[in-house]
Image (cartoon, rainbow, N blue to C red):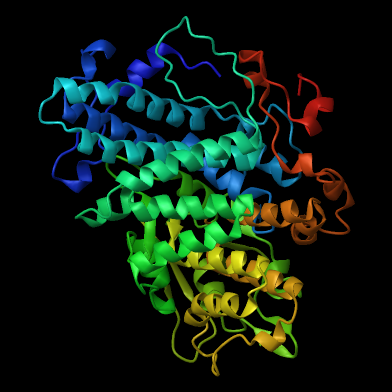
Length: 517
């Protein structure tokens, strides 16, 4: 896990110039004559390093792992077109320790940039008299949150990972760092986030900054997600309510969600999203995985059986009532392959869906430009709170929240939407919540972690497998056997990481695979 001192210098040199122009926020300006010890001299340079932290999350290696770790092994994803070999293998539950998507270097690169900022930036307050401690604290809040978000992805994917909170600045440092427990890492990032909450800004002035930089609500969104993962439901509900109260009622009309949230970006219901553009910061991850104008079939497609069959979250029969039979999200988020049996991803990839009056068919137009990537938006928070309320068996309030997202995408439903008498047990409410989260948040890097929470509560893979195995043909006994214990639901540590860090131990389920795979 060693990160070369030369790499850190290079990362600082590829800094971002902060100007009054929002489009310059992620513009790389290399300055090859700069050296590390001369860099931290001014507030401007501190801001450049902050931008480098954000920029690192937009790199292909980082964002592709956000997608793969959060979606690939779930029931949302099956084979698309021109699939890379490592993704193809993961879809077949063939997960060796040499699979490139088990490598966590891109995430630790971001963590290291954050650690470098937190190490050097405080000294600039004494050097630059125009840079105050209060200003430093607001910037540190952003960096602490970026680092916490990165660690949260690592913990949910690998369970135990090395905790590193110091920068790689000296080749004499000891880089043999053992794994820390999940509980330890989560405790650390919750502490950091509560500190960040004290100093983070409430808002920024421009849309790109309002949604593209960390605010108090972005901190709250991440905290709520962590509390839900930890099964601290009271704190999750409390944090969600603080966020919702702060945002106000800004859920968009269901018919405008595709355009405003995923095409235009930085919408009213967005909380935090990575900013991309076609000149300096191209989002090729979305184009590869989901498709684009000129290549509408990306690496992934949505399982056919989940569109039309009894396993589908759409047209779902419950207590003689059909749930989501005219759901806008089925039309807006999925594009049926003409003459085929696959449904490709239209969310993020599409620019416009056109449906003529009295027609059951739609024309799907794809975008020329690249999209932002949304980490958190309001509907996610609403459904997080609903999940926590269900675990506390407050079904009435949970259903009211679910109806908020459900009704906006089912405008033809009358009489108040989903009825409590049709979901008369905790089990039925949990299933409803999972269907609604699947309908609302598909392809946003959420589904695998949603199913993992289900498995963790049961301390068994069985509930997760009851969803995931639906996408496989036949009995899927081979695939199920490869996820038959809880340890198998986490990814193995990549073989190169084990070679580079002698203090690491392979995750338990994969120890039998050996070092040569």
